[in-house]
Image (cartoon, rainbow, N blue to C red; front, side, top):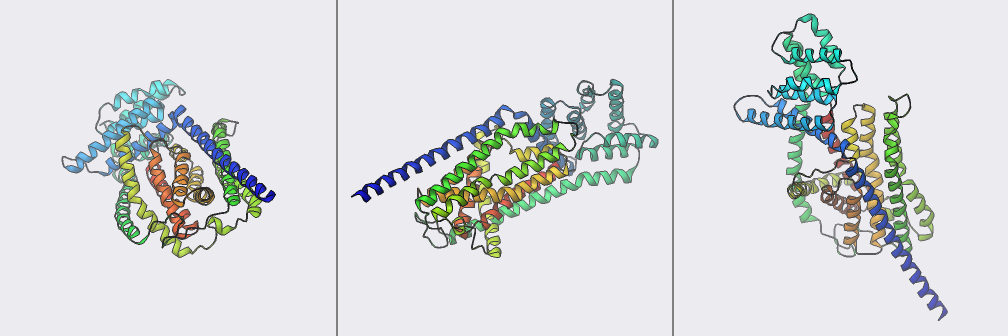
Amino acid sequence: MGESVEASAGGAARRGISALSSVGIAVAVAAVIWTGWSHTRTAPHRTEAARLQLEALDRARRGYLAEPGPGPTGAIRTQYLGDAVSSLEQLARLNPSANSIRKLMLMQHMAGDRAWRGTALRLRRHDAQRPLMETDAEIALWAQVLGDEPIPAEGVAAARSLIRTMGLGWFEHVALSRLYQRAGMAQAAAAETNSARFTAVLMSLFDTGVLVALTLGILALAFVMRSWRRPDAEGSAAGFRVPERLSPDAALACRYAFCIYLVGILLMRLASPALSALPHAGSRSEANPITVGLLSTILLALSAAPPVATLLWQGRRAGLRLADFGLTGARPWHDVGLAVTGYLAVFPVLTVTILATSRLLGDDPTPLNPAITAFAGSGNAFIRAMLLCQAVLVAPIVEEFMFRAVLFRGLQGQMRTRWAMLGSAAVFAGLHPQLPAGFPVLFVLACGFSLLYLRSGNLLASVLAHALNNGGVFVYLALVAGT
């Protein structure tokens, strides 16, 4: 009788702790979502500037590649260049710097808009750090480069040196090409024109690759729907390797570890303003952006350390093994093929979700991920390499372990497999800052990663698919934001 009462009391205590852990996860998720939402909504200037810059560069390169004329390609060119001018006008209003004014002026000239002369005069208002005499000299330079009068050969070297100090990025090729044309240097002008067209050609190849991937994805989706069966409540369907349910203590340890992970993310987001201020601190400002890039990568990699330590501490008592998290049983070649096939199958669904979300939300832009904002706003190759490392290596490993292994397994101890999958996918999507428009896309993506985890029985396939998705985004960013 005493043992029965004691067991009943122990079960009630365990249920109470389990319910408390679920409440803790919900509160922590809400806090992280709130901090992400606050950062994107209270300080939209940087993300909006990055979005406009990427949009303008994308349209400008595509328009530059199209041939002018009265035909269809000429109409496409006019549309693209007009969109680029519109984006740069918004960017110049949002960030009225000399650099944004120069890019708008060059874009207007490329589009055949005579308003570029008035835009050049705006440099007097937005380049206050330089003496007015130097600013007027630059305006006179642009009047020569973009005007119709020839430029003497002896003036090319000085003009070229000045243009190269302005940090125009891709627009530098456009400006130098025009300079050489005005000076009658046909070979040098052709070289700059080819440099400006090069990344535009690569973007066209990227678009072709996306269309090929979409076609293959439709075929892969049809194959997957025919060959993969959805797991039932206990995950016993053919083709899936759904792990057995964890014991109540083991599932509780997983949820407890995930709570600690959420607290770490919350602390990192609260500390992000101080981290962003590091480039402006101290006298050695050139080294600080590299420090920030390294520090952010290290913090992301270490974010899983406290949860892992918790699992090691409590896992022995709860009987957790590496196999319980999908860390064993990998079949590299099989899992690589599975990751590629699975991601291709998800790609058409992602495309439809993006189109549907855009139609429903209209002109409300999706907030950019901070990594994308940093990539677009930085010209430092080292920082971009760090961001690429975060996106393609660190984030897939950390997030797949925490969401697919730890959270999913912890929820699976409380609910059916399908609900655990959907719940972990919803948390994954909610914790990213691209809310609200990005939630459906990230939710679909996370469900695809979960199905890969269930299909393979280990994390390798979902990690590879996650890396493939992030890598595709950063390849596009490199093409658009590169020079």
